[in-house]
Amino acid sequence: MPTDPGAAEPPPRNATTDPTPRERAAGQVATLLVGAEAVVLLGIAAFYLYELVIGGGTDPVVVVTSAVTILVFALGLGYTAKGLRARHPRAQAPAIAFNFLMVPLGIAMFEFAPWWLAAPVLLAGLGSVTATFLMGRLGGD
Image 1 (cartoon, rainbow, N blue to C red):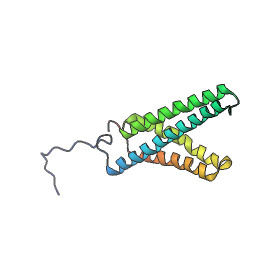
Image 2 (image 1 turned 180 degrees about the vertical axis):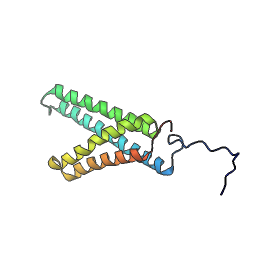
Image 3 (image 1 turned 45 degrees about the vertical axis):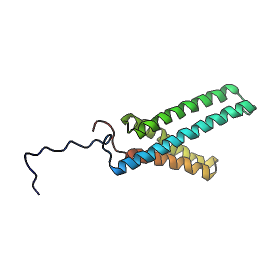
Image 4 (image 1 turned 90 degrees about the horizontal axis):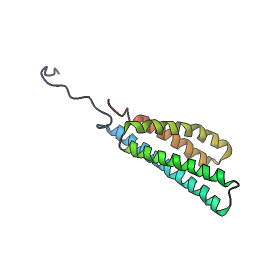
């Protein structure tokens, strides 16, 4: 069907402001997974501090340093989840980078942890990376 030569072309689609239903769903999945990872890290940090309080840690400096490092990652992932929810282009890189590291960790965990603990780590890493990629390229398309 011929188009009207005088008609203006529609502006190009912007994945940040005009996501397709698939991109919107992938963004919601990525947000949920990264947000859940942040909550899990907060729980791990709290457990470290609990062990310090009850005297379970052998070296208080190591325990506190570990807990603070975990808290920094939890805050970063929480902020990344917020950015993914808003479809901010700078949120994709840290989500992908962190979760690319989760994949080999999940694989290695099958050697020293029960499968029911290793499998969610591996699946969360793979799922987050996949969902973040499926969000489409965000930013000035």
